[in-house]
Image 1 (cartoon, rainbow over the protein chains, first blue to last red):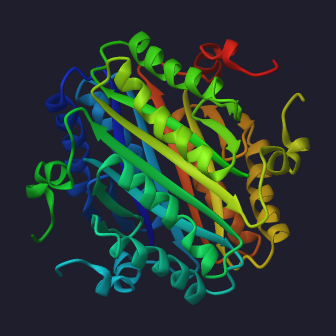
Image 2 (cartoon, rainbow over the protein chains, first blue to last red; image 1 turned 180 degrees about the vertical axis):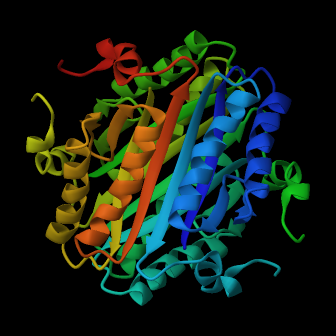
Length: 102
Length: 102
Length: 102
Length: 102
């Protein structure tokens, strides 16, 4: 298993914030329906899965805003892989007592 | 208010995972004690604050691993700013019904 | 000295590519006039300077698109620092024989 | 055609700078031999190619440091796509007169 976080940024044409969020929402919905484990953050969505399926997902998600009317999209992806496998819970458990009000 | 997510990556010398997490933990502890609102994710920590205080924090956090023994650090930062202000809750509320099991 | 690469992305309102490039150009012009050493790439601009001056520059550059009419800007920054100092030429000299047609 | 920039960061075990650069060099060599157009920068390498081949390349490059002995790798990728296609020269030509000493 690998972890990746994905931030899809539709650049053109974005007349209003509503439009921008609509395109980003379409991308998040796609991730939601992918079957992969995910965590939505304010700046990106993190997923966990097998290497091939995570890349398949990234390839699809980046293109979702085009289907929703965008003409220019920049996607930022960070892939974190560890020999032997890595899951979101392993990374977060180190920080458990760092979480505010949880 | 602006939002920023910060990922501090100590590169050298990192002999073991324990050492790596120790240095990253020191950076997260610094954020925790900053007084700014934060959210810890598997790939980065997101903070919210006034422009100057967010930059002051980033400048400090990037250097924490050096104090913990690192000799090379790459930090990735994404700053999201909106005319009139932007907070984490505003961004996340759009995605509320996208969160799995919440 | 530290190295940082900066990618300024104006998101709203971006009706046309011309408008988008105009705002990004304004940001690059600001870097050009900063006095810091820089390299412009297709995806970001890399600068080299003292820690404080690099951060001062990032703080200014991120806000340039707002002056050019943008209402929402995401800036991605990567800071690379090495104990004892790091300059662009040191990093690139390792790759000298990797450059195509040079 | 799409543009992507790739930064491969081997995290563990990295005892020395030489080791780190050796692993990053192996990744850059792989890109060099891929047949895709590329530009090496101080913080990342930018490539240009068809969507599928760029993703195939990213999938391979991220894993090169493991073959060179790494046990943990974080790769940061930014994909820039425009309806109708986008090439490195198109993006850079806007900035031609911004380049110092060229």
